Length: 354
Image 1: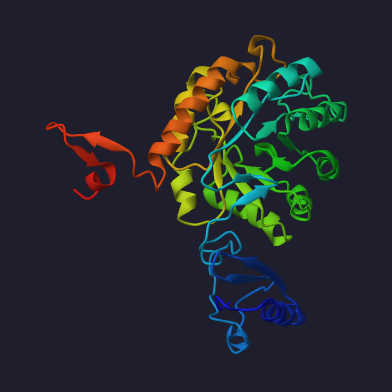
Image 2 (image 1 turned 180 degrees about the vertical axis):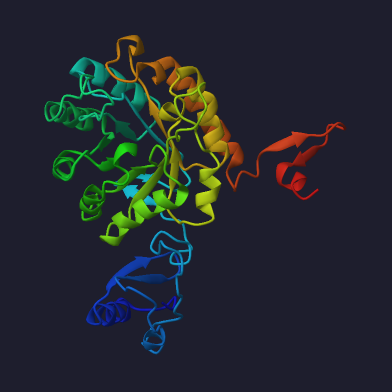
């Protein structure tokens, strides 16, 4: 649409799209509103829209995904959860234990997360485990603890849904719906999350290509939920020195394709606590919008993924380091300067031009 298009003109275009049997997806941007069209089985004649008042241009999207692309929305999406954001200038930190085990454990970790300045608390109420005999989470009993944490610490709650009915509970008690790696292509769950008004954090599948991951996001957005956060959490490779191989190249690769925010999970991406901080630093350096970090007050006693959980002191050190890197690598970070051999200061951005 034209930059000055009115809401009535946007609604008129939406009405035309729907009248011919397709679905319209209005996406307001910083300078203009784009309207995505889905539901067509092949190319449609875009000329029918060109003369509608307020329309600036019609762009045909030939990629398999349509709504997640920069073609539709050149501006980056910022996901807002009340006063907290993911995708804005602030580095988003989502932290907490792999699983909610009991009230004392959860509250101890929540206090650590709050003191770090993080805005999001993650904790598994249901746990999809490789073994049916492993701890499967507290289930609905965990919601009482999560609700108490939300009220006591003011943290936004992020937790995983394993099946469509779980989304109903998260809508009542949580703030962000997490779709885990094992469910990245659970299409009924993706569609249900797409009908929710809560943001969705979509983790990359254990062996998913970039295109498969983005198409999973497309499933959510095609249902009308445009607040999707992508999470790189490592993929299975031949490597044996890590649990997974954290694909940091996916962050800049997605930046060239999509407007969606991207965060990195170095905890699942490595499986070893000693690797988490170095990979978190690298994730921020390559441009991730945030991090998901597992923290436990007593990792040696954790019922799930204790080997990759950081202690409170390790987590505090990580936060200090990644925020320094974020400040140094931010586009508007013009204060950073480097000394040359003659002790005269050279702006970092000047070095890039040499």
